[in-house]
Image 1 (cartoon, helix red, strand yellow):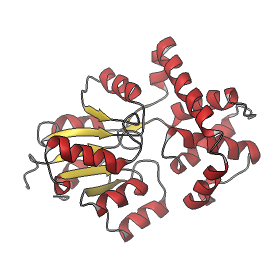
Image 2 (cartoon, rainbow, N blue to C red):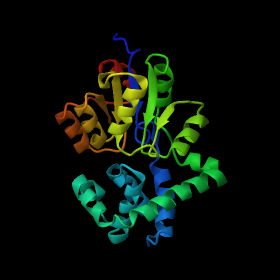
Image 3 (cartoon, rainbow, N blue to C red):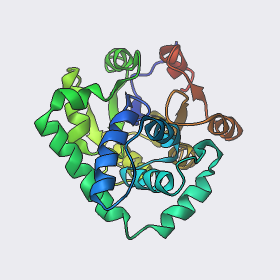
Length: 250
């Protein structure tokens, strides 16, 4: 078995370690209404939001899902291309900062007022925390690279008694800048970083700079994303055999 002790494992948070889609809906809905949106809270609308979660990469993107649902409650998100989603984002650039501010305010409020309920809206993917505990002892270090706010990520990990270094949205939203920071701080080459994310928008640029990129198939993505991962020769991982698959990346 290959030696992994000189490698850094960089993990995305939402969609790799944590399934937070329901929390995104609850927090995002409150923020959207507060920002002036008009959308009825319904289970069928919530289900559609959850189906469209794969389109979002950062917190502000949730605004677009709510806006699209307000404009067309029957929308089929699986038929939406990522490039069309990004074009729509350009149209609402002025609205995004206000929503984003309310989104993180609502999350902070929920954490302070009812932490248990907030926790119950989300949770780690099966087996991922066990994987982290095992590989913390096998590799040089495991580091979180996330577009999530630092405070939330820390609170969630602390609840499960896991301590990891976290590079968050407060530093930068560009994952390649996260990886550059890891390279410099840990004094490793890009080829010594294993980066696991559920977004090809993060993985493809990382691969281009020499990082060992791998696609988290259990995250917020689609069959098309898996096909594109294969076409870009990015290994596709699954939770069931994650421990063994890691060694095949080096």
